Length: 343
Image 1 (spheres, one colour):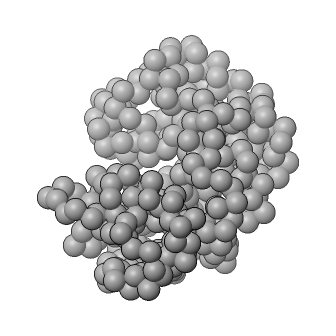
Image 2: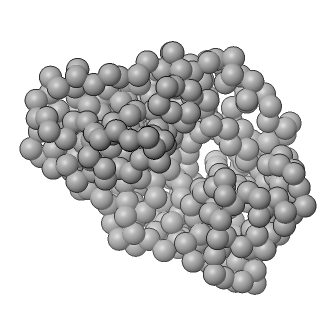
C-alpha cells in the first residue's frame, strides 16, 4: 500500500498492510533535535526518513494581530506587547463584563476574506511532496475561542447566567470559521484528503463542561463545520484532548471519521475500552502516550506499546503520539522506535 491507500484503509477500518501513521505537528523547539538525530535538514526529510503517511498543512492566515488561524481573534481584555498567539484561555476576555446578547456587535470581528489568500493556500498545499495523505489543519476551534472571548471561568458561568450572549458569540466565531474554511477548501479542492478540526472539551479526568451544555451551545457549530468539509469530499478528523468518552457518540452522530487523540492517560480513554465501545463506528488517532512514555520511557517500552495498540486496532487506528505537538523534551530515539515498530 502507498501512503494514501493506507490512510484511507485505516480510517475506513478496512484491512491494511500496517496501520497508517502520523508524526503530528512537532513544536518548533523540538525540530532541531529531531533533525539532528535523524540527520535531515527539514520536515520533508524527516517525514521521508521515518516513513510517515500523513502530511499536515495549516491554513495560511495573516492579520495585524495574528499569523495563525487558531489565534485569529484578539479577545485580550488587557492589551500587551505579547503575541496574541501566546494567549491563554483563562485570561480575561473582551466580553467578560457584558450580559446582553446585543454586546456581540461591540467587538471588531475580523473578516477572513481579508486575511486568507487563496493563492497562498493553493501554493502551500501543492508544496507537499508527492504521495502523502494531505491533512488540512484548519482547527476551527469555536468553543475554545468562545472561552477566550470571556475568559474560561467566566465563559462557563455565562452559559448559565447569560446564555443568549454566549450563543451569539460562539455563533459569530463559527461563522468566521465557515467562511475561512470555504476559502481554503475552494482554493485546494481535489488536493486535500482530510481535514483536522476540533476543540479541547476534556480534562484529564472528564469533560470541562457538561455534555448538555456542549449539545446546547457548541455542537450545532461542530455539525456545520463537519458537514462543510464533507461537502468537499474530505475525511474529518476531530481533535479534542482529554477524557471525552461521554461525547464520542455525539461526534459519531455528527459524521466524524476519526477522533484525535486517544489521550492515553486520560480517564475512560483506554484503547481497549474505545475499541469495544466505538470501534465499529469510528476510527481513532493517537494512543502512544506523549505525557510520560515518549518523554521518560525507553525505546523498548515504546515498541511494546505500539505492538499492543496494533493488536487492539489491527486497523481503525492511525498510530501517533497521543498529542499532536511533540515537545522539546520528547526523546528522538523514542520517535524512531515508534515508527520502526509501526513498520
